[in-house]
Length: 159
Image (cartoon, rainbow, N blue to C red; front, side):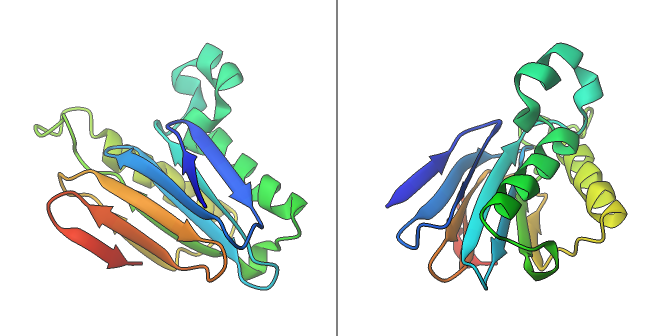
């Protein structure tokens, strides 16, 4: 059973039959978290680093931003019994799609915001697939905690 996570969206579940998937990770970031003891996992697909970039949007769509979306992802996992110290974190995205001149650097800024939040909260990233110029699709299988990415033009790889 595949559950799609849209742009500026997240899904969290403990359904062992679920595979969470988010598509079109260009400069956006996909954050997959998983607690193997209670088999709870979630994916967040955020677009921008900071909610202060657009105050109205941050209230309407907090999952659009790293600094408001990431805490919501973890809190939702805690509601299902996950514990921060057991959670495995894997990330993908942050490429330079439609910004090949690197003028805006949204992908790099999204990644830097995530690293800053994780550093402040003592969260380690187990594995990542970041940067480049190709969009990605990120998957999380709830029964096993397996996370993989499908990279346009390159195929799939396990994270």
